[in-house]
Amino acid sequence: MIKREILLEIARHYGTPVYVYDLEQIRAKFRKLHDAFSSIDTDIHFAVKANHNPFIIKTIDEEGGKFDTVSLEEVKHLSELGIDEKNILYTPSCPSKDELKKALDTDIAIHIGALELLEWIGQTAPERPLGLRLNPGLDIGGNKKIATAHQGSKFGIPWTLKNRILKTVDKYRLRITGLHTHLGSDVSYDEVMRQSIDFLFEARSYFPRLEYLDIGGGFKIKYHPDDKETDLKALAGYIRGRTKKSGEAIKIKIEPGKFLVAEAGYFLMQVNFVKKIPGKTFACVNTGFNHFIRPMYYGAYHPVENLSQPGEPESVYDVVGNLCEEDTFAYDRKIARIRENDILVLKNAGAYGYVMASHYNLRPLPKEIVVDGHRIIET
Image (cartoon, one colour):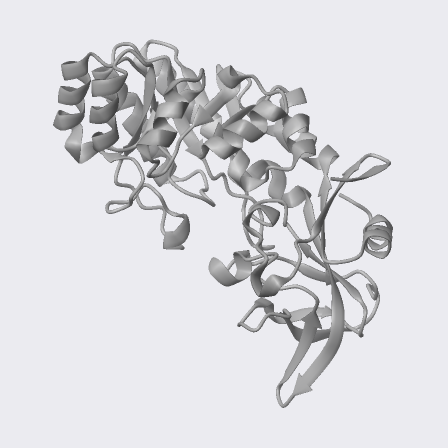
């Protein structure tokens, strides 16, 4: 955890709004995940869409991590950072055939999530090893924007089309080397996750040349104080039990994104002024959803603290942005008394923050700073 004094120094030196990432915290989360799965042959593929900062990518690579991508631009970004193509998964959503053709000409592992594309590959590159992204028709509940394996989702090939899948694979003698499911984001270890794992192990019997099963990512972290993190050891233990039951070991792939980086991120903002109306007090800050959209788009909870006045009595505020839109970071939040020019920190901001930022209202993007021990680096 980065100390308050360091965050304030970064805000003073680099200005706000600014993202700050703690590389030591990312290393600790990676090692925690690695240790939990140490008894299973597991590849950890970081979901690049969560945060593509070069220092974060290099840190995860140095820890022995691999990578999951959803676009050729992400693949190119990794290649420019020296990541071996053999350590890259590519699971696009609705790619053009031109993009897919370029991917087929590389050494990256590809997951196909549409029968139409599987048929096309059968006609154009039947010898290419492929993974299948399957939709088991499971609903994790909660926000539909982050659920990706329910019936009616655009993601994956519904297993209800099993006969057509097998017919297409047989028709072109396709080499299916992996099966993949991804339930969505903010997934705890519960009955739905167990059902998804069971589904993969059962579907495995239809594909004799499989090399791995990919259970996806989306592992839950503690955004809200009442949240519980995914029980990684219980999850790994269940997979180990299923492997023993099947009688044959197989590599497991996981695709954590925010689990590795969310808690390592801090988004610093400055208070332009405090506005009071009957029954409401607003802390008006110098940023908006153009820089951090999760609370507005997903209804996500993020802790907000006053770094400048940590010892002051608490008052209730709506923390609101400077866009000509509804852009509230926090409603009715108890925060240490806020004054003009105070620096606020929005926590758990390391995932789906900067990567989703825009120039809306023609405002510039925030800076990104990494902290690695005693080193502070502008990226």
